[in-house]
Image (cartoon, rainbow, N blue to C red; front, side):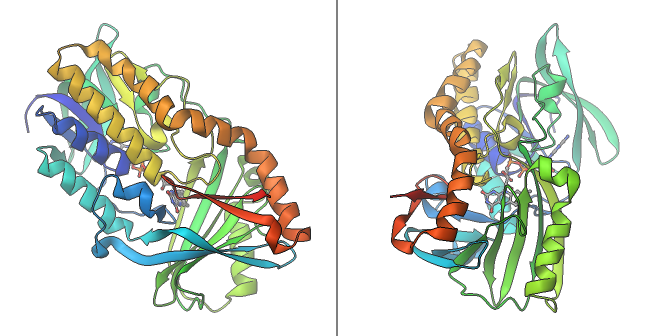
Length: 371
Ligand SMILES: Cc1cc2nc3c(=O)[nH]c(=O)nc-3n(C[C@H](O)[C@H](O)[C@H](O)COP(=O)(O)OP(=O)(O)OC[C@H]3O[C@@H](n4cnc5c(N)ncnc54)[C@H](O)[C@@H]3O)c2cc1C
C-alpha cells in the first residue's frame, strides 16, 4: 500500500464500491478501505432490488440472485390480501456475494482494496480534507489523498469529522430488524408486505423469499415508535403468531434513514455517498440501488476533478445527485406520511380494482395509489 492516493473511499458497501469503480475508470489511483474482515458481511438488509435498479451497473449474474420476484402481496391490518403482478422483475439478492462482486468490479478498474482497515479520523490541510487516519490489522497509519469519499453507511462518522451536518431526526430514522428463517412456506416469487398498527406501526413488515422456503423476515418502524416498543418485539410477536416453529438462522438490526438527502454532501476534499449521505429512498427504505447511483456519480466526478486538476469540480456532485434522484426523494418524503395513511385505508376498505402499484424503475420501490 502507498502513502498517498488520488482518491480514498471509506467503506466497501454498494455505494463505496461504485464510487471506487467509477473513479478508478478515469485512470487515477484509488484505495478503498473496509473495517470488516470480509466485504459483504455481516448482511444487514432485506436484499430486495428491482432489476432496473442494478442492471444499469452490472450484468445480472445468477450467482448472487436468491430468487426472482414477479409479484407483490400486500396484507392489510384486517388480513385482506392483494396480490399484484409486477410489470418488471425484482430480485432477492445474496448480498454476501453481490457486494463482493461489486468490489471485484472496482478492483478490475484498478482500485486497491484493504479489509480490516478501520478509518478513525481524517487528515486536514487547513480546512481541506487531505486523507485518513486508519488502523490496519492493529497498526495505525496516515494515508493522504486529494479526495476522500465517505461511504461508511448509516452510522457514518466521516461526514461529521469534516464538519458536515449529518444528524438525522430520530423520527426519520427507521429502526430495522430482520431474521433469516427456514420452513417459511410462501410463494417463492412473491414479496409479502404486512401493514398495520399491530404489525409494524408507521412502517411495514416484509417477508422476502430466498429459495427453499428460506426467507428474510423483517420490519422497520419509525424512531418515534421504536422509542416505546422495539422493532424486535413486533417481529417476535409476528413470528410467534405466524411461524412459531421456524428455525432462525440469522438475526440483524440496523437503522434505515428514511429521509431526504443531507443538506450538504460535499465539502472541501470530501464527498459522501449512499446511507452516509442519506440517499435511501424515503418511502421504501431501499438504499442499495440509490446508493449505487450516488456512488457512481460521486466516483465519476471525483475522477473528472483529479484528471482536470480542478478539485472544486467535486461540488458538481451535489447538483448531479439532486437532478438524478435527490429531488425525487424529496417528493417521496413529502408524500410518505400521506401514503402510509392512504395505503392502510385503501387496503382495509377499498376493493382491489382501486389499487394500483407504481413500480419505480431504478428502485426497489413500490407504493399504492388511489386510482
Ligand atoms: C434491516 C434492513 C433491511 C434493509 N432492506 C433493504 C432492502 O431490502 N433493499 C434495499 O435496497 N435496501 C435495504 N436496506 C438498506 C440497505 O441495506 C442500505 O441502504 C445499503 O446497504 C447502503 O449501502 P452503503 O454502501 O451506503 O452502506 P453499507 O452497505 O452499510 O456499507 C458501509 C460499509 O462501510 C464500512 N464502514 C463503516 N465505517 C467504517 C470505517 N470507519 N472504516 C472503514 N469502513 C467502515 C462498513 O463496514 C460497511 O461495509 C435495509 C437496511 C436494513 C437495516
